[in-house]
Image (cartoon, rainbow, N blue to C red; front, side, top):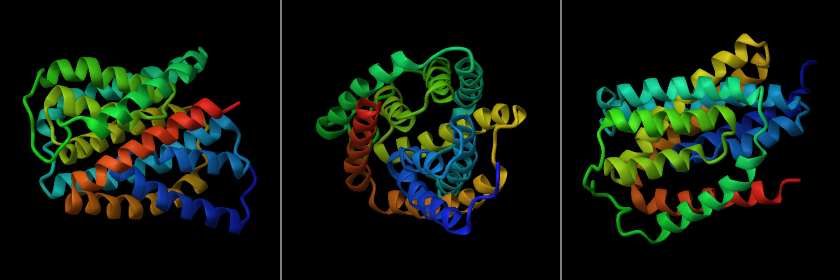
Length: 251
């Protein structure tokens, strides 16, 4: 495609910074970045692919900050990361052959239910709870399943991962957010590889937005570690409801 005007690229970079900040805290950064890419004139497949590129920068920055500060350990997540990668790659390939209309109808209802859970459940807090399943089973079920969903459809992936970490592994909300970023980065990279192999990524746009995503995500992850549940909880509710409304109201 032709090079974007400088003022359009500057706006995309600004949107990416805000998206990275929000995504590091509660997910849903694509709710801002993807519509902005479509508005800028990218065809839908190129917009999806370029969004994966710029989103990978943000999820990497947030993940690195959480790991560096000891908020999450990577060793227990090896199987979930592997299965998330496989699931996302499978979903990216599958979406090229199948429609996603059914998910568009089902996901908003699930996200509204998650928002209510995040809002009212006493299990959502700064303390860890009892772990219900092992990391291997978590990887096979949640890693592959949510990874496939992210590659196939995408909206609300952060909410799906976060609630799974809380309900199944007993993570507090801050650790769940850190784990979510690690698996979200894994999913983004897997999907990006297959989009790139197909030649759909607009690199100059994605790299410029990616740099801004990194800055926003780094700041957002710092806010998570500083403020914990009192910041994450209301934003998770708002992001889940915002994604639901967008999916319900889209033509």
